[in-house]
Image (tube, rainbow, N blue to C red):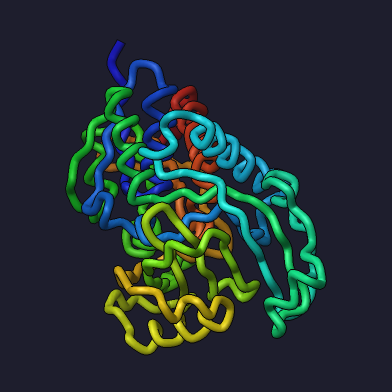
Length: 336
C-alpha cells in the first residue's frame, strides 16, 4: 500500500504538537514538517508558557475544555516523568489579580489546575490597587526546551524536517496527500485569511532567582513568570501591529508595571529582549477542506489562530486536527 504523504506547515508549538500526533498515530504515513523557522526562532519560543487559557466566543465551551484538559494532562504526565527537565515543563504556583471582580470569577479551567481558590484579604494587601485575586498551581512550559524535545520525539517516530518557506499551499499538492496548515499569524498571507491578525508581544527575560511565584494582572498584559533559568516579564498586546523591532518605550512600561507588583525587580538584570507576533483570531480555525491543483487534490486541514493560548491548547487542538485528517483520508475527494 502506498504511504500517505503528509506536510505540516509551521514549526511552532501548534505545528510540532500536530506533527507528533500525526506521526505517532497515522499508519503507513510519512510526515514532514516544512517551516522557514524552527526553535529558537519561532513565535512560540518567546511565550511565557503558563497554562492559562482565554475563552473564545463562538466555540462550544465543551470543546475548549477538551483542548485544555488534553494539553494539561499531557504536560502533567511530562512533569511527573524523567523527561521534565529536558522538556522544560514544571509546576508553577502564583496569583492572578484583578482591579475589578471578573464576570466569571471561577473560570472553566479552574477545575483542571491544582488548588484553585480565591485569594484572602491578607494576600490581597500585597496588591492595593487590585480588588480580587485567584491563587492556583498550573504548569509552565518553556518552549526553548519543549520545542526541541517535541522535534526529537517527532524524528523518533519517523518524521522528517525540511527548512523551507512555503508561500503557496497549492505548490504542495503535487507532492503530498495531506497538508496541515499550522502557519500561525502568517495564515493571513498564506491562505488569505483576513480574520487572523498580529497581536504584537514584547517581553523581557530577567535574572531574578529569588522569585518563585508568578503574578499575572487580569489585564492580560502585565505579568511575571519565574522559569528555570530566568523570569519572563511582560508585556504588550498590540493588535494589528506587524512590527518586529524592539521598542524601548515598551520595555520601560513593562518594567514600571511589573516593579509596581514586585518591587524587588528593581534589582534584576536584563538577560534578553524579545518581540513576536501572536496569531490573533476571533476563534481558532480548526477545520478541513480540499485543495486542488490541476488534476490532483490534497486534503487541507487548518490548525491556527490560537492567539496567546497556543501552548495552553496545543495538544488538545492537535488531536482535533489529527481526527480531521483521519476522517478526510476515509472520504473521497469531491468531484471538481
